[in-house]
Amino acid sequence: MQITTRFLFLMACMLPYLSATQEMQSPHVEHIMPKISLLTPGLGGEFALGRTVTLLAEAGISGTFLFDITDEKTSSYVLVAPFAFTEFRHFYSLQKRERKGRNWRGNTGAFVGGNLIYQFEALYEKSKGDMIVDKPYQPTFAIGPVWGFQFTDIRKSNLYLSVSIGPGLAIPKTGSADFTLVGHFNLGFVFGDYGKEK
Image 1: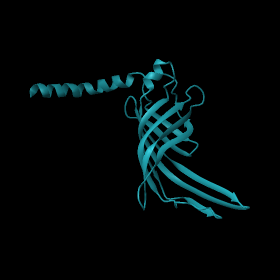
Image 2 (image 1 turned 90 degrees about the vertical axis):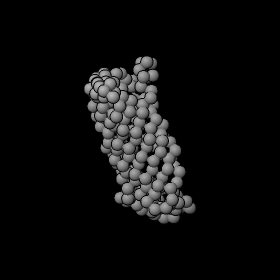
Image 3 (image 1 turned 90 degrees about the horizontal axis):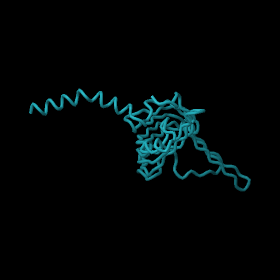
Image 4 (image 1 turned 180 degrees about the horizontal axis):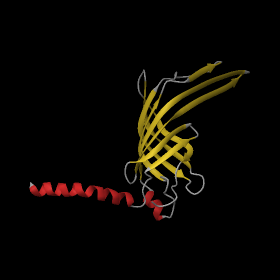
């Protein structure tokens, strides 16, 4: 019993050292990456949870615009709604990219993870003409596993491109759940200097 207690005490004392050693290993994800998104306007950040694991959190505004012209009639549908989005990411290709001499800074690489998004009540919704919308908009929660890739231009512009996709489940405020595609496609800028080893 005393040996087990001493061993556990020794391990507890070594945890800070082991954690610091792991963080210094290369390659690794960035500790904090503030982001501004352009395609779906929003603000967010990507936060390190481990050497190859991050959590992306973002809030912004999404929009839908449908337009149709038939027999000299014009129909349209416009929707603007806020959203909150999180994505858990495990970057599995960082070491491979480093071995090949490719950029891995700025969390550049392929990842697997999980995606969670909530679409809030619409800020603006208007239908004009004979436009038919199959399913009227309502607040929806969606979740699912994803595969994706992120590229950050650390040398010039700090521009980033992030793509993820996977099967998911959409759960509307009212009605039944439905299978859907979940994911994230965005282009924007990161803030910080990620071009040098730290």
